[in-house]
Length: 105
Image (cartoon, rainbow, N blue to C red):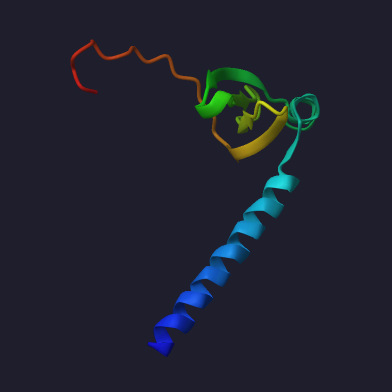
């Protein structure tokens, strides 16, 4: 019984520490949209390639560079904060046709 209580307490502590780490990382990877977009353009040569509406009014955007192939996915929240979600290399634009309705794809 004591062992289970200690294990559970340690697990809760680790979860709390993990949440703080994510929060700290989030602050470092977020900023005003204008500043984030300017830095992506000036530093990486990336421009907006696509945009979509996410949950709770968040705007999801993909930025990429035609010359270097770098890409970045951002999310802008209703409060104006823009956060970097993912980035990488070898961006390739695709124009695939949507499957016909009813194909269950």
